[in-house]
Length: 227
Image (cartoon, rainbow, N blue to C red; front, side):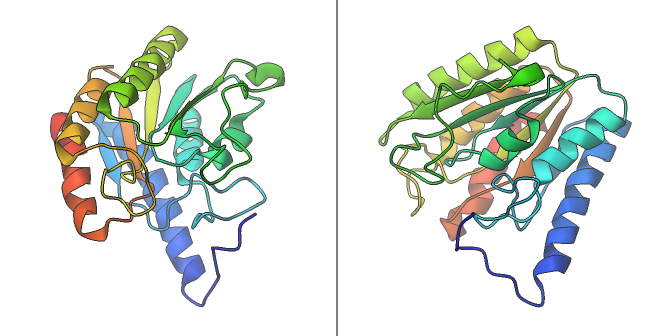
């Protein structure tokens, strides 16, 4: 669905291993009941069941969520905190009531993927109200972002799910070349603390992040509260 994702000789092996990392992360979390982090590359949240794009080929978060369901969870929440809307994850679970999908992202009126991620997209059929989009304007600071996270976590608590998958995009970082939010490295620890406080068995999977030298510190800051 986007002309930014080429396929070369090494693409499928990388895609396959990223999906395997997602599945293994879910398995380990269910076995040990401790937060797991899957360093998936390429990422996955833009991939639907029949389209790829946005640097995503297979939807790692959807694979992990389904793995958790197959392992005994009755319902799962996927919280996507990437700067860009997780259109693929939304599409995969749009008509299902066993996966709650929530995305905090840049308003698609000005940011990729442009055509999905609006607040009025709430799911359909059995999945109606099992989809929540929280689009934010350019220049959003930590205060505005955390207000959206509070809304997301309240919805997750009310859904009474058994487990949580976090699509962790660190492109909300203030110096990310593809982002327009104002979130510092220290802020990622605050975000991690709030999500950890939800008290759910959690799988964290890597999505975006394009300030290459700062990806590691930002991810480490987010994961610190979970250790």
